[in-house]
Length: 413
Image 1 (cartoon, helix red, strand yellow):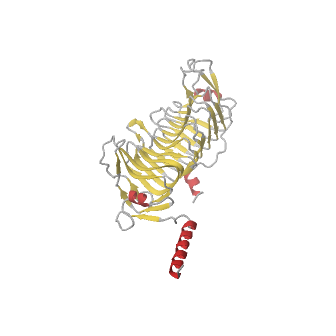
Image 2 (tube, helix red, strand yellow):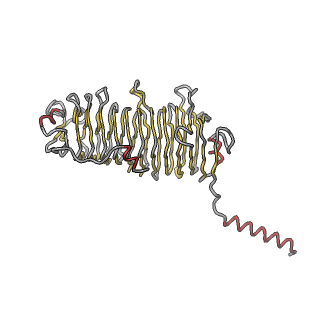
Image 3 (cartoon, helix red, strand yellow):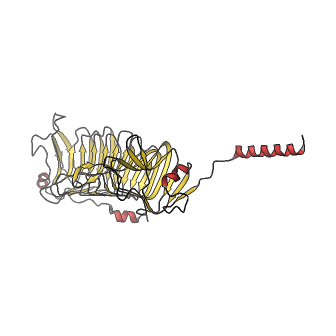
């Protein structure tokens, strides 16, 4: 073999060995700027070019570029599939996805972000989704989702997610999502958590005038924690439904049209509700602070303060098939038109009257007659099929932990 051929062979073998032993390509960061002075001017172009594991940095501005999805007649601003990704905006109200004045008919679904892939992880922060109607603002179906410092405003649905290995939504803002105070039939959710999501945390978020703040649904939606959040206005605060289990702790609820917290149709669910402040004071007088609606599960209430005003109720109960364990709570009414506890006759489950054990709580007074006057059960109306037992009750308020959202947030600064 001549010297030249031998040298070429050695180079070829060395290159082959280098390729065989090389690790995965190093993750890359892509820059998006409205001015076009970075890698891309359109977010979708950066997503298409990026590989799994890359990061996309999006500069300030309102991004209105979209893609029509002919099947289903909707459009999407950003779509990703089968890629792990980190997406970072310039901050809430700095980087905005969605038209300022949408030019689309109301029946055209507009989605800000769609990301799919059962084994995919996605991290997003520093963005706002705005003016997205008749569809999901953010749809995610994957392995793990982490969202921080994010806002959804003026959308029909906020974040609709399946996260098989958990994650979180933290320090986020939701405003006017799925709700119109002049049309109370519009009641979509700000955050929807579907099975098989597990170990998911929603914390330090604010919900203002939203249809339903957080909805967790179905049997294999488990260990969902809603904590240190504030809910004001809208139809409802938090709904655990159809078998979803989890905890609601250190949250505040004010002026919901229908309920602060509800557990409904929850066969086998476990829901722990602790250290929350709920004020049922909507002027329509049809709201309740906490409700169990035809549930089958275990519900534990500890150290909550629920106040009813304007003819509303602290508790709305229909629990013949549920374990209801309520102790050390404050159930208070601000006026005599409101109720401490009430429910309704259930024509679909006739039978002997059932008893609701509500002993061991503080009702705002030590006068049993005054407490009884605020409770509506079969002692007031024989057509009702439940009896609420409140004695023995606490002789005074229970010391409660600091539930101030501002005070709690200060702990994380």
